[in-house]
Length: 370
Image: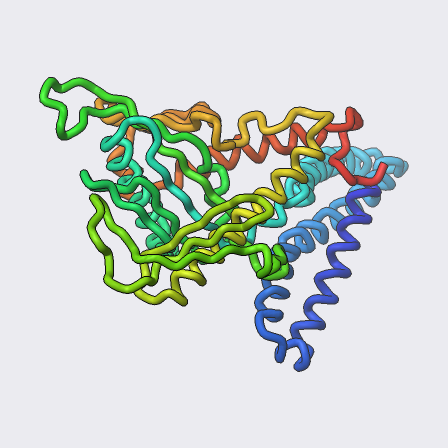
């Protein structure tokens, strides 16, 4: 209880500090700073408000306990009933505060790079990659996100061998981070004359957009090649040497972009992808070190896992982590992802909470005071 109050006091003090910064004309002159402060303040306010309610309930509990000890039997009985209700409220508030005080993923508020690649299944996998890209694009449109294609490689039969896009909006990475993994489709391809169901796979990667402050790239560690863009089947996309391939020499990471006719725009887009891939690799290394003594990457939607199956014959979508099946495949493929994302997030949040409380056997989250 003392720990709750201490952390609530800290949050209240930080919220007051941020409110003061927002009223400071000098802060307003700094590009992007007001938006950053507003986001942090927006995260703190629910905790501060719930903390006020929690402290008020504790005060009422102290008052009710003192009344229970009164000589007036009738008043004491009323106080006991009130105390029971207040204790129930305290338990409920402590559960809600525990959720709010859970360590946050520092990437949750970031925009995200979405990478979709055809896996096993040839042309059918490429077609399904196109279906998934449209699914995420439509979902993004419905909730007010913007989607900017950065790079794509189309299949001769349609769809994509690979497509990369930047999604910008409110807490994009937080909403989509559990989509990374292997998505499996079971359906009869349009080219299948015998009506047999084929199984194909598509890999989805979701990475937080990296900012300059996240990753420092030495230009001397880059090899930049410029070439003529090529399309499906060897067709020329344009007649200028505008395609850009960037190789990060220390890691061997290669990123290529050719969608724009401008060499400058292709280079800028390629750098966005490279920066985010380097950030992801850096964070994965850090996570691997932290997780060396505990359960790691279990059901977290990492890329090697089959996370979801789309079965067209049964019009169902099954998410294997959340353990749910929704018989609304057409709606989901059309971009109605809300229910599915909500259910997956509930399961993954609960799992993260369990990992945090079991990580040191003490019942405390990592870094929490003893």
